[in-house]
Image: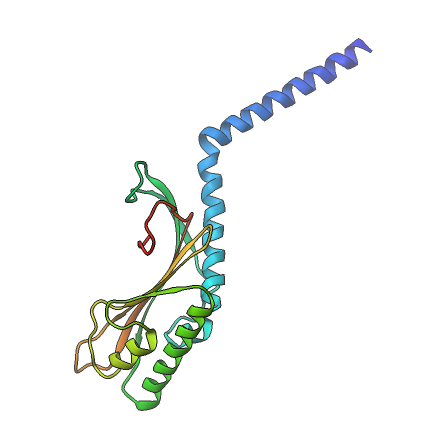
Length: 198
């Protein structure tokens, strides 16, 4: 009986030591890897969700596989923070020639109007020093106005910060083209001012 109790005590002691070692491992070494896995997944999931809601106009702008995106994580020096911060990023970039035929130009302007509508419904904030809406920006751009800077939109959730950035990517007399970037970053950095690009 005493031998059985001592065996149980030895097993419990070993189990307790293993738990302590595991907790220390997570604290000193594994916590960073665990955070990377969690925020990498969060970033990819947010990218698919946020841009999936804008799928139809974004498809017109050249983005086809919004659900298939990878993420990368690293420690970054960020303004307003004293220490480097973990940042996981999921991004897609697209160069799209709009062309010069009238139906293609009208379709881009029409989809830009639809994008404005969806952005407003889904809580995005449009930002541009050129024109206040994507519809107005695209309407002028397809007529040959080479805007600099471009136009963008921002949205932050409790975990993620996402952005759309669109710029003119041609010089006359080449046909209209755009360079568009979709990005999501996680974790969201709460010390950054409103509208500050993460």
